[in-house]
Amino acid sequence: MADTTGEETKAPEPTDDLVTTSHTLTVTRRKLNYTATTGRLVLRKEVLTDGKFDGHLPKAEVFLTAYTLDDADPTQRPVTFAFNGGPGSSSVWLHLGLLGPRRVVSGDAGDLAPPPYGLVDNPESLLEHSDLVFIDPVGTGYSRAAANEKPGDYHGFKGDIESVGEVIRLWTTRNGRWLSPKFLAGESYGTTRAGGLAYHLQHRHGLYLNGIVLISAVLDFGSLDFTKGNDLPYATFLPTYAAIAHYHGLLGDRPLADVLTEAEEFAARDYPWALAQGHRLSAEDRAATVTRLASLTGLSEDFIDRVDMRVEHVRFYTEVLRHRRQTVGRLDGRFTGWDPDYGREHWENDPSFTALTGAYAAALNHYVRAELEYPNDLPYEVISESTGENWSFKEFENAHVTVADKLAAAMRANPYLKVHVASGYLDGATPYFATEHVLAHLQLPAELRDNIEVAYYEAGHMMYAHEPSRLQQSKDIAAFVQAASNR
Image (cartoon, rainbow, N blue to C red):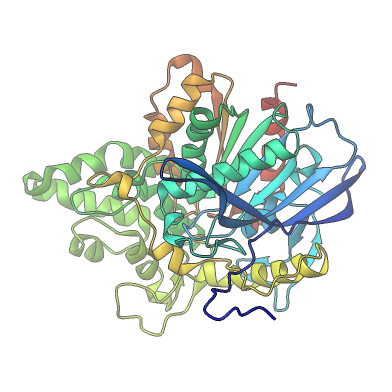
């Protein structure tokens, strides 16, 4: 027997561990036969040693689930690459909430489903119109950095876009889909990723897209980050505050449309002017502004005066129903919760997030093993807090984070690129009026402005938790993909 004393034992090199299963889904007009491919794709890097090529070494293993329609012409069949945000979120929300062929039974605000929840077919799945690839960025889901690699290399703006872009390039190449109509679908920070990816895929790989679906968009953080000296978010959040107050019966029986119109007009003109005056604002104008804000938000004039007419969003969610001993959700203002202390400024947690997380976690962990037949003993990171907490925006040092410039550049270079934006009126994380503000400032020629369409829903961040919104949103996205496929 050979003497191996002192020799290092190396871990085996990772390989793709993709599993393929066959399924059917009945939609309104026909039965779809489709293939699901689930598992981890190994990303590799080219290594040079002393100027000499030293091979392609593994750098990360990225979990994905792809659904492809059987017997379809790959040059005619669209494909949509989907992901959520966080940063630090897996793609489970879009996967099992809206786009995939199976969806979770979670219930909704005021009527939540009890554990252990369940899964049902999703006849409104986008699969009827497009193949689907759900991607979990490194650090989320089952995706991890390879052995001896630094996870932090992927937990930042640039590294994230490059790694997700590499997954898209690899999948497109290996599956012969370069001539397919191609789409991105991102939610929340996933829209930031999508905006950056559209430019990166064009610039780095010559991969041009047909369309981008932006759900609960954040393209410019300056429009919603409550940082010192930045008064813009106080105005962009105001219509959302009004929608939440209206939902909870604090603004009388006025139609929502009337409330939003008044809030938008005030947020677009008089309110920013009042904030910009600082100490130059007269006592009369200040009193009028405080009164108007109270009438739109359901907050007391005393509270608004004490916070200097500047209502930060978590303070609002803590304060607006304090008189009822309740808090409201940030992701979705329709949800309410309880707090252990009703004397403090900020609630303990977001009741809309805690209400939905259990259902999605249970559904995914069952589905991936029992139906997709992919075994993995790693914890599936629905939301990786460590990933989000350590996220790097070093590319934006001394500046706010924005991809508005990159999205506009991608659209100018590819005049066929269409954008669908979905916003929830009760989304208190990425308010719809902030999205409108950013879209209005995109540097696009007049000829390309019609390439952007916007849809609104009377729900929150994950508007598909609201059944009427889910049904309408499914129709809206399907129509967009069909129209933008140029077929």
